Length: 220
Image 1 (tube, rainbow, N blue to C red):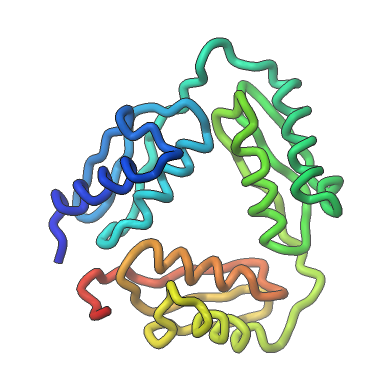
Image 2 (cartoon, rainbow, N blue to C red; image 1 turned 120 degrees about the vertical axis):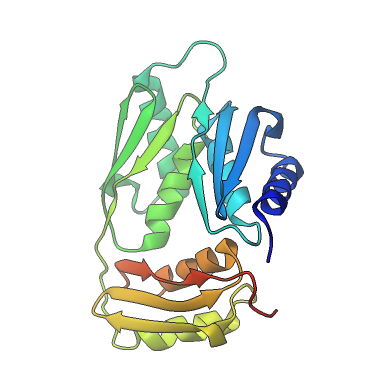
């Protein structure tokens, strides 16, 4: 069982290992396996990268991201940010970008609208994260699945078995309409997130309740 100090050291090393993160300006504190990130970064993309780096570390049960985004120099006009974000959406999602609306207020970018698949929702957020001047992204895009399949549960279980990052034998899937609930235990936050991502990829899924617990003491 890893101690809080050991987890903190591992998180610091993971942050330093990631070339996309300016780790020297980020502080790490750990209490009861919960990691708190503080300090500042120069872009929203770096903030997201730091949070995901902490989630990858074995023993982490949760992450509180209190990192502040400090933009170098003067901030951009909201209208310029919005125009660049719309262009980025059209590049990444040429067939569904018109269904997504962009609202920017004080560097906080909000995505609205409806799409059919969760990957479209995620890719839209990824497209605007690196837009210069963005301090925060609020993804309020709703999902409107076009197909509700009867074998969603079977497809997710099969996906777990194909995924090298997920131990399918320790997980259980319940499907009710377009809602999927995940149960079981995994060794790390990263494995928990990998299982949730696999569930979201199933056709017809509009909601995922991730009830998977984290137990670093589980055998490999």
